[in-house]
Amino acid sequence: MPDKSTHGEGPRPENVFERQETIDVWDADYYHPIAERYYDDAVPAMLKEMGAKPGDLVLDAGCGPGVHSIRAARYGARVRAVDLSNQMLAEARRRAEKAGLADRIEFSQGDLTDLKLESDAFPFVFSWGVVIHIPDAEKALDNLARVTAKGGKLALQILGRSSLDWRAERLARRLTSKSHDEHPTAVGAGVWYDFNDDRLWVQRFDAKKLEAEMRKRGMRLVSRRGAEFTEFQWRAPQALRPLLLHWNRAAYNMRLPASLFCTQIFIFEKTA
Ligand SMILES: C[S@@+](CC[C@H](N)C(=O)[O-])C[C@H]1O[C@@H](n2cnc3c(N)ncnc32)[C@H](O)[C@@H]1O
Image (cartoon, rainbow, N blue to C red; front, top):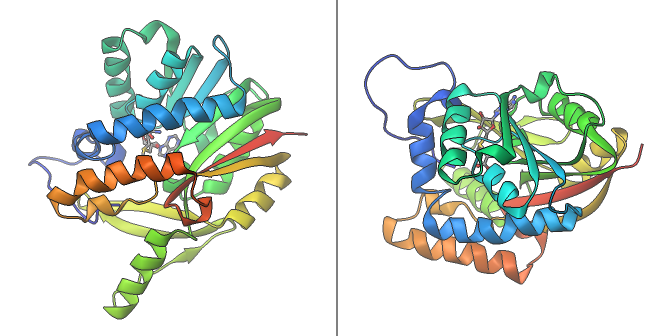
């Protein structure tokens, strides 16, 4: 997670997700060609584990620039994709067009805390790296559970509080007297970070609390898997970044214990 980044001149939109520079920062890192190889493993594996088959309807909730909507479409799914940010949606449409998959993905604007989609409408829903940035994550979880069809699956890629990344960061901050002001929630605790000279809410989830909260929403945990082992590449010297990204793919495929991973994928089944 970056502490800051450079930006251009001129008036600034309210929200970091409405900025082209946010996408540029992600392109240089999260969507780095080495990281792409890991996503090419992880996203289809997640859909397969959920039981999605070619032709099935999948909701990408918080699609950002659409990189995983495109992967889901390539997998053969019919994709519905929503995001709060119009800037992200414009970029997502551009990328889907370029990938030749625009006819398989329907993009629209939507707020997960106030989602207008029909209840029980989607047999498969995934939300990758999104609820971690929503201050009212519980509302978003209500809606994600609500729109998942009965017997359907919901996958959440979130940051874990048990991860080695977070333990190391907390220790380093304690030693340098720069501890974060952590705000506890029903599912973990969040921190406001500086990002592109603005504030970005980043919540890390407690696995047991998330499982209990989702149970209240009629969702049973069926699997938990490590996703990105580390996000320290943000802070590493440029030369080390590719190594960390290679390590992430290797750690994912080795299936090391999920609790160690910076990000984790939880899959829930809607039982009620
Ligand atoms: C870190 S990005 C992840 C994007 C994409 N899922 C991926 O993994 O590449 C987080 C996304 O969540 C979206 N987002 C934040 N709050 C949201 C909300 N309340 N409803 C819908 N989308 C939201 C942002 O606009 C942004 O595109």
